[in-house]
Image (cartoon, rainbow, N blue to C red; front, side):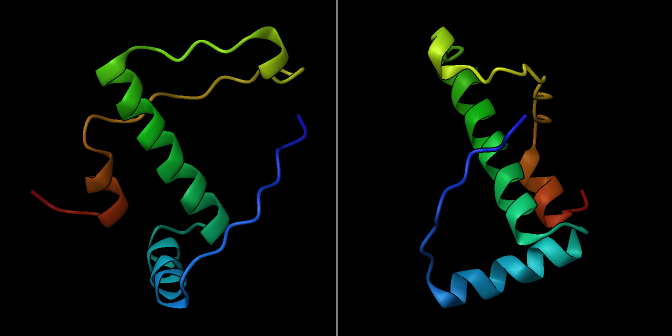
Length: 81
């Protein structure tokens, strides 16, 4: 599946902090942001219901997106309880 491209303008301080988080999680900044977006969408769908996409909005190659854990920010920041 060809991935969509999107240019993101972000404050340099936020970018540098994202680099630290991504490194601590063993991911690139791009993959870290993608993971965070998945968590946000999953949280939204849990609260508001599944987002239905039209056929023209679906990629040609259908790949499954795994649901986020209950506390995704704990994973992001590796918070020990």
